[in-house]
Length: 69
Image (cartoon, rainbow, N blue to C red; front, side, top):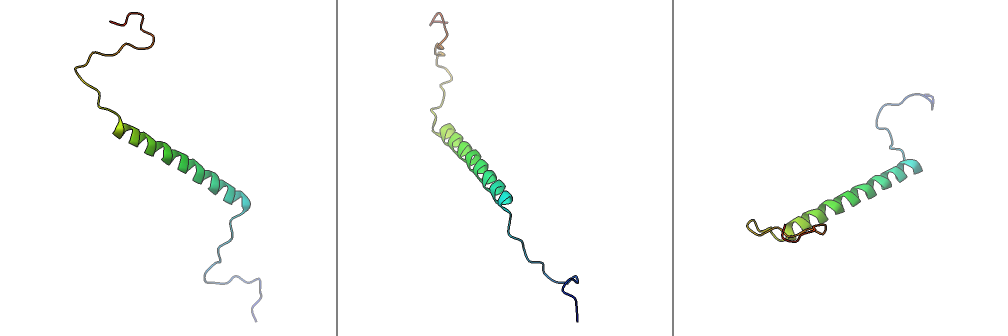
């Protein structure tokens, strides 16, 4: 008769992740979701932004003293 402590061949059962591993997985999922949202919103903004006119005179910036410069 084999001992219960003897090493067995075959498949090893998967262990349930610990609470720490689950929390780390959740944090990684949230970080990836935020990064994906930032990328998608940036892509949408780039696609929907009006094309800059190449021959137009540049607009004066908020810190310009003389608007014609």
